[in-house]
Length: 164
Image 1 (cartoon, helix red, strand yellow):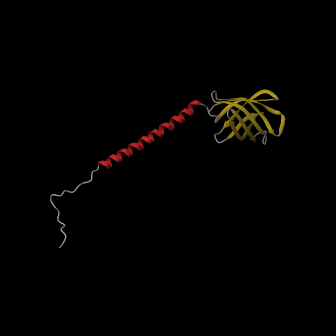
Image 2: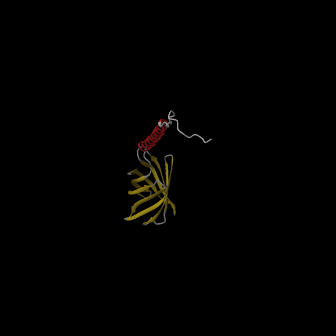
Image 3: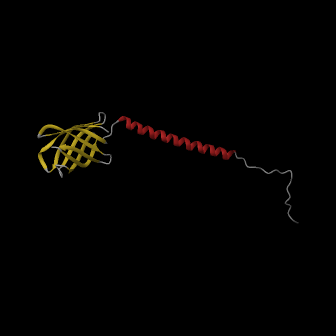
């Protein structure tokens, strides 16, 4: 006897419901959008708070330098870079001076070590120390001294104010 494959007119075929698929998609999209939005708000708030609360030491600093052998001050500029490098510029006896080096900041204690690469004092190395005040944007109580060649007279003081 052969099998009977005829359709019974009383039997109806069930169609799958799309409600679970739509519900799952809606919840997935909602959770993705919500998590991204929260993350962006938190990140932005933290960056804004840090920026508004304190001045960083990175930037252009302009001030005056005084030598222990002369009471006359001279203008000079220091550029402090975020990568730990710094440059220093001034004019001595009408000759442009340019120095490069590195810096560190531990708490409020600033220290820079530079070497003159252009000008009258090529090869001279100096150490700079000062107190950083992030509220006022100043480097105060600054002192400089030659570390090479060593000298008891080549030293002095400086003050700097940040000019971004």
